[in-house]
Image (cartoon, rainbow, N blue to C red; front, side):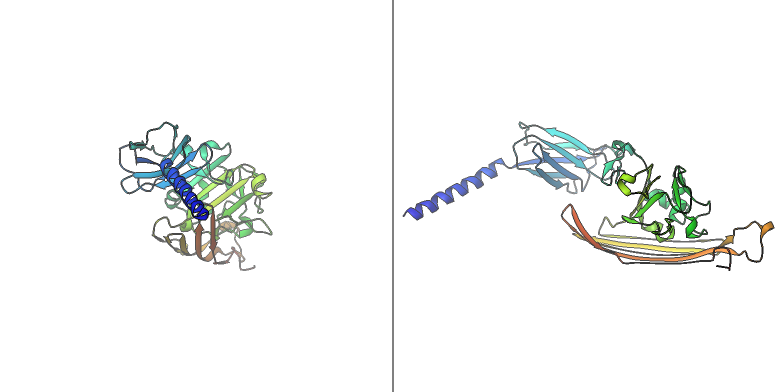
Length: 345
């Protein structure tokens, strides 16, 4: 009898706790729109309490969201959407949750742009004292430049050791300099692609042809010393090249062009994303006969065309675990051949 009575008391206390938790659960309802009152789909909604507890949700096709609030203390609402500024709003303990709120987002300004190079973490451009310049995917695509180093020439302070680009110059002369610091074959700036250094481990120069422009989503250029974050290689700054990723279920792009000096190039990108899995494939090929580097009045029998030919292939397969962990596998191939302006090499 005593055992039965104890069991009943335990069941009653458990049911009371469950009932108490359910009564504390509140739902924050809202609709997110832009400046002309059009709904914003897939906006991220995050609720952070004063004690650090969080609750997240996402808007539906009509811009509506329903976020659970399982705490009674005051909290802050954060709303993020691509190409829009972050909206922050404080809620007190006496807030009425029975009404549906309408939250209007403003277009993102330059100062709201998020960069990762300045502090090695996501930081808004307006919140960092560092000099950071970004090149977006649209700017790279509309630039008449077949290689990444040619596209970077529009960034003030960026220069290579020689005026000749990677199409014709030998890799040992392709050292990068920012703000005129240490202009030599051995770079005084750190260059990263997908977090992997492109600087040669022996001479410090950079083989820019290892990165196909079609595989780049954004380039961030940190001008000024950043040795505390990136080591002694970042004496004059850091160039961080961020790879393209499939944001939707499927993504595909291709590019073909040709020109004088027997120049031809073709590249393609294909990616897909499904739940926590993603994969992308990049292939590119470039060749040019080039030109003779020496002035015609000074040429000799030893001087010839400075051309190059290279090929790139890479595959990346990744999986995301929650919000803070991921793993990926990326085999790649790069091949290059150069004439260097002389047969004596």
